[in-house]
Length: 183
Image 1 (cartoon, one colour):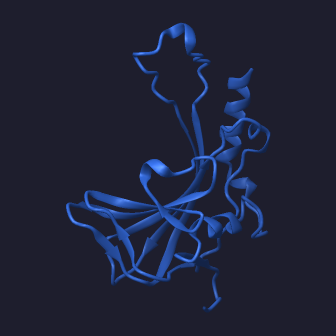
Image 2 (cartoon, rainbow, N blue to C red; image 1 turned 180 degrees about the horizontal axis):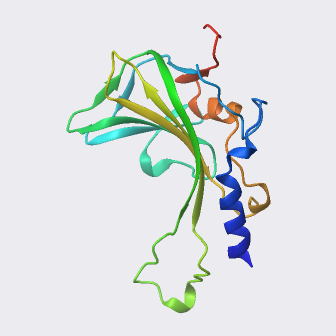
């Protein structure tokens, strides 16, 4: 029964018909013309192409609180040295939403009698992906904002992030700017 309910949630999560004109909605329809403003240099660590922002701070990959909103800024290339994304305004050329189930691997060191594997995913990420473009910084790929909705008690409320929740994750680092608005 849980698997049928989860399948229904995944099906609804991918429906384009859920788009809303309300910016407070988790299904807000981003119109063409949005931009992202990076307010200060953002450094991507060596041997990586991503950096995570949560609660307005840079957080290590293994320190993200998965059940709270977070955003991942992504470059096209992994480099041995740190890379710095310079402040500026980036064009949002595509916005997509997805629901990504991820099953955690069961450790071979745990006896099977102690592990409940009911077939449901361990993580269910509701992601909003912003593909970004800046002629001055062609290595910029995009930004994905997400949270894991498999927390106990969340299953009835599963949804994508609102614009306000995305702004809270980004803090003063970045801001999504609607068409026609100037900073």
